[in-house]
Length: 114
Length: 112
Image 1 (tube, rainbow over the protein chains, first blue to last red):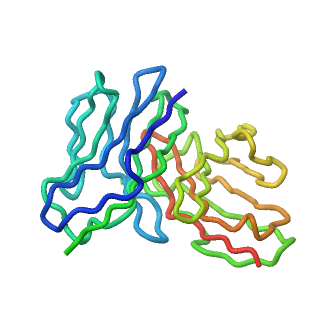
Image 2 (image 1 turned 120 degrees about the vertical axis):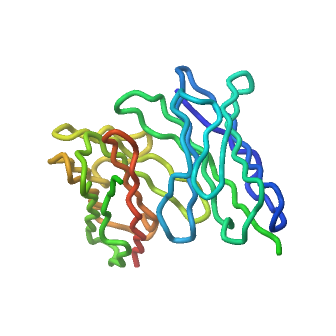
């Protein structure tokens, strides 16, 4: 079984500051890991995904995440926050097999302070 | 890229009526479709997984007779909320698996 834990339901950073959203996973098989962003009343947009290739994954909008097996972590970072980054972010995991479902974390609301 | 069209984007219905939500994969074949439910300010909870031509597999606690899922073709899956009640009001999102995971834009259901 797979699960993810997102540390911090709310994170506030100043515009221009580093964004760090934490995610730890649990998986009985080599996982696929994802970060999604959701704006109010909208669907999900994939930021990036890890599928057992390079451990440092670069995504859209300047985001990246590093898979650390020893720490069972997949934290999301961005060097410089923009006001437009304010949204809900979800870390998610799947088992990687053909029909494996994606299991989502509880989400982290990112607030950007002017 | 892969696109999943989900309709309607929002719907208001009266208590006791049924509502159908459609998800279509526009440029790929969705061998597996996942249906999620999201309560306000909460995460996405998986409701069920359906494979084309097979019965859906429901997660524990999800009433299969209330949330009817049909995946009759490789490009279309539907979720029907039967005899809807106000507590069924939620945001429903589908996700199609066909080489990757592609999410629909969601349906906001309000039962009055």
